[in-house]
Length: 143
Image 1: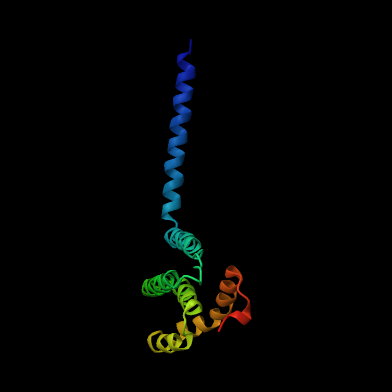
Image 2: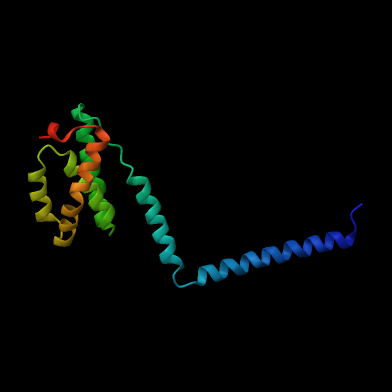
């Protein structure tokens, strides 16, 4: 049926392949930038999942309130973890759906570091426009 030479060659090739896999994995893990690249990929994946926040129906006050509280909480958690871009995005979502954004911005100005607050102010117009376009509201409908 199968000769001993063919089995030997197959075992040898399989052993070579496994050895190469171990060698490649060791080289990859010993790369100085491996952990930084891995963290960055995971952070980007996490942001991609979270950036797709579902915009609530503005006719249902309870849903909007839950969305607002969730976005504030996520923003604070991400800022505490050092992810300023993600935190600012969530806080901008919260400000955009807030009933009194000026008062919220005053509170955030007192609590956030100046550079983070400045980043929030820069992102706020684009986030507000995105929310308005997703909800289908016209600009004249917003107070």
